[in-house]
Image (cartoon, rainbow over all chains, first blue to last red; front, side, top):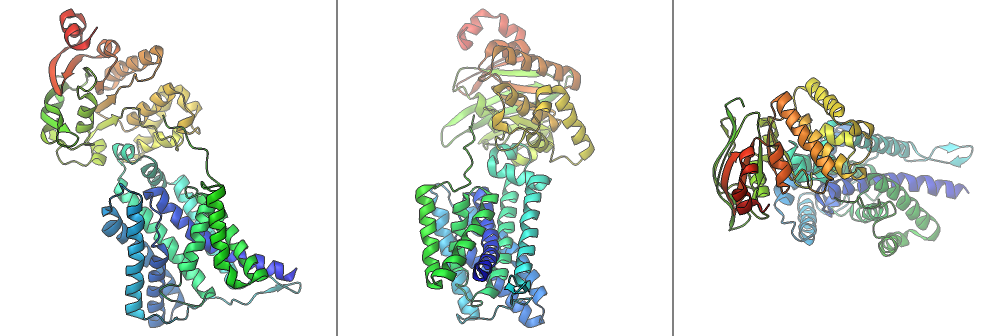
Length: 292
Length: 240
């Protein structure tokens, strides 16, 4: 029972990170109809910037803030310099370009920082607090939950309630009509990329201390898990991405706890395959709106 | 009629790819009037509106709105110059609510207080929309979508309204109501309307000026009354 509680909390904590990362994928998918396969590499790049700043200044928090800013800027840059110029006539084009970006970013990181693992520091203790003799969750888990809770609800609020959120949704759903109504559709797209990449950088900052550390490929498996989470939720649904992230986090935690951690990459792929076979639109696929 | 021309089009050439759909269109719409562009399918009516609102880039010619040359103005800036374009099929965003669609029409405006007033006015003008504020675009009837598209354009308080086939797929009663509303807006607020229609009868009934297009050119621009009464002309170009 203790083990179950521990695995559940651990799964939810990792799931929260997958949820944020999946949400970032969904944001770009909704805005640009591109699955951003480069998101893991972009997030790692932002984490390396944080590492540089933190080692130079000795401040974790300065590095944390810089990572998110770097993520935002990198997202805008990738949109403006690369993705904007990709011909979307075939949906495969942006995918290939994104995969090219992965190779480029990982190669550059390898050249600058080398390919050995760098330590990723956690700002709070990762040892679990015990409640009534049962190890429940660590201060770091609380930090992860709180941060992702704030970011996810902040984004939800922004999209649902603010003028810029309305513009972003309109630009994503109906770019041509939105332009006629005075919406700067290109600007909204760049903002979407920036936000998604910022969220991705945040997720990397939160997950890396629980992994082996910083490495050009450090987010590869996280990306696969988050992509699975996004597909489980249906690529078009932000709430679906969050639920999908938590589901994947729990599943992987149970698999790794009860069946062995070697099996987790396999379990992700099995889940991905199962969802694509049984319900390719995702568990949260909305009923297609009638277009008149 | 106030005597000044709000929209002047000179020698407009535009199209898709190599072959132009519009070959040298000339057109003048005085402020505070309704002009109806009619003509056979493929005459270039929709293309004309799309070229005016910058959705396709004209190859040649000039578009003046209140004397200002619109060449090179990005589409999203035109609404700030006072031009509203309600596209064919009306462009209601199905995934947004009625209220969100309407607010979107006024988001670009600096004068937030007046944008709010314009929104209230539209709700007064279109009662059914006020009752369905929280409904999504795709839950509306054809007539309600029409109201929403028109209302969304009006929230921006345009000087010139471009309407593409407002009667498409609507019951005659709804069409008549829309046309009456256009007249009312013209008389009350001085709105200028350029309307493209297949439904020649109701278009000419509401318009001050009738513009007949054929094969990418304006062949006749005359008072609508005259077009309605000239049997030879109707036979030659309008087929009724």
